[in-house]
Length: 173
Image (tube, rainbow, N blue to C red; front, side, top):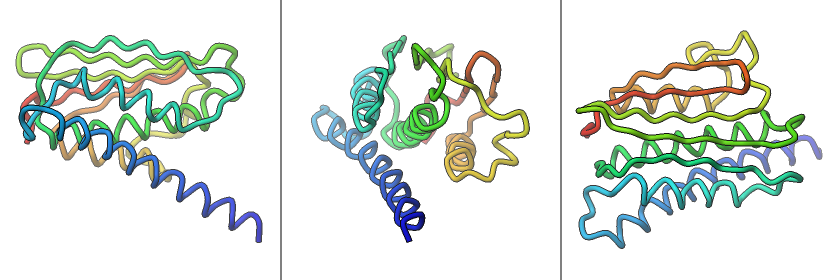
């Protein structure tokens, strides 16, 4: 049945995207002086470009990155890479269908021992009845679990697009 084949294809593409996120991380770690930590700026920019490049979109998605230099443990970066993959994938698949100028904005800063990662798009936003706690989608559940795994907190702002604000200890192991 063609519907089953399309569903299988979508599941495999999602899995391949997650694997690609991990490959970018491990490639960056392999080339770094230490395998234990990496500058988030050196990690996120190529990762985001790689994820965006996996999608064929009619209108190019613009990316606005404002990422401060900060060394983070590789285990923490691994979780952040998967979170970014889920956010970008959801934006491209669902948020930009009626958007004339799709834009993804990613910011990262560290204030003392707290890191703040913000992901936003200018798409249609999440449906009002969707939250991380009650979502029935694998991607949002995965984001929620990974944020808990890094001892972080996440807040969603829904309006002109969607914004995920993730705060976590910058030295989470």
